[in-house]
Length: 261
Image (cartoon, rainbow, N blue to C red; front, top):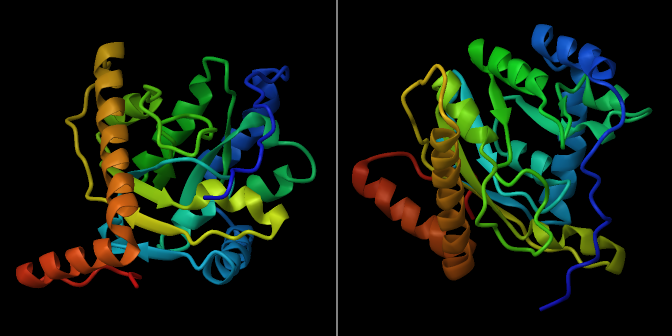
């Protein structure tokens, strides 16, 4: 097995004040992503389909409309795009505030991305996410916070996703992205084969003011489901998982998993 390429040290604080990011939140709350989203999806999808030989399994589990929180594991900067290229819905992403600098902020903000100030109690991020979900949008949030540096799905979830699930009552769709930990090996001309497995929606009753314990319990349950999906791919492979799901859905008279191969 090839070694993982090294990652830059993560920066967990942004010295810029909250007010610096207000305009990005305002845009995310009041406007839909524009043509930048579609152009970015086209380019990244071509890269995913060709060099990464990416395939999606059970993308039909993503609700066609209505609020939903998409919860994938996180190994690579490409995870946003890999998750989104197998679904028709436009996904609104959270991204660390350090990325909101020229020129990239001119792509992120029109594309529907909004910032989160890591290392700070960033209530604006939750207001933006709740606003998008409140009008029936799809928001992506990583259970683990930042990217995993080990190449494995972690065991410690950040409670923020639990808070968002409970305060909005939106279903959470766990997603396993397998193979993306090696995307950064492209400098060695090594391109992994990537598979995206979409799980079944998880639901919790809406809670107006969930406790920290309630938030953490929900976050841990989501991460455990992501790990189960990921381990399934690791053990049985893309074809094995797709074959089993086709058989199960065939017995139930349901459509076959979308995008499986």
